[in-house]
Length: 424
Image (spheres, rainbow, N blue to C red):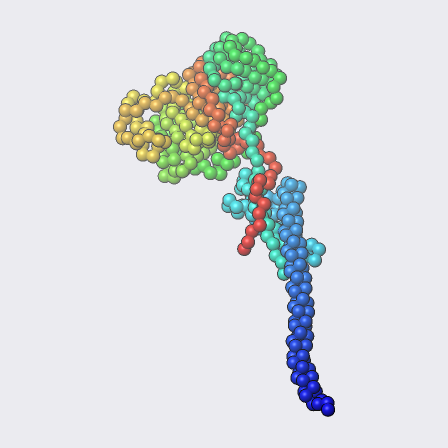
């Protein structure tokens, strides 16, 4: 006898236990499939995002390259373009770029060829945005005339003179010595004539570069004017005598200049500077033909590498070797704030050597006589005629760190290591 119902019941139970497993497996396969599709979509989106970001970065770089091209090929960019956005949302491929150029010093391109530039390029591609920044600076080189203790744009002429210098003297044309002793190495573009040379002589040199007419601009813009009419006079003209001129002292007005730059427009009037102490940069415009610095003076710039004296025109210098003596003149040349690195005093017991320290530039001719002592560099735009004693002690600070107007500016260059990504 065969009993079938029991077998049928077992099969049914087995079939009932298989269906949930199959459904679970099918669901798992579905989930895995959907997850794979989602992962593919996310991967594609990430890949597209990476591509967009890479393209946005290239667009930003293109903006910078456009700025570099403009600066290199448009000589008038400083006056023609604004401090700010130069190019905005310019199309490139399927994206855009923007270029911003600023002067980080004061936001003004026009006021100095020496200020750096910061170029910022922004690239956009899809939802991606990238900013790249670059810095440009203009390299400078000192004028060749600063290499020597004395240089003339034309001639050096010595007549019954004694010149002593620890550095070369030179001329862009010729040097002539008549009954003089020239105790220095001498260089000239053309001829060295006469006798009395104790050092080496060399001709055929390349002309040394000289300041141009813009050399005065920086100092005129920043200097405090002194009216020639505010000064006492003598038989020759205006007189600057027994005074202290410095960043803290201006005997010709209430306004002082923190850098010690003072400007006098002589208006063709003769000016005599004598028996005075000057700590600053004095700029003389339009001096009369009889203008002179004479007797004893003690003179130095208030800023170490700035000129002491700048003359737009011609000048005479005829100094004494005698010290500038407070007791002899009954003048205190050491008022509050005048000296650098010394203690102020109220007595009249100090003596100061008669010397002009610093850079002296005379754009025209210079007539030197007496016992002149200079420490720095003496530059004459045209010719020097010298007699008497001329003692020159060279100071390389002007060549190593030339003051405004006494260097040449080259084209803007990329500052090494300045390429960088920036984030708002």
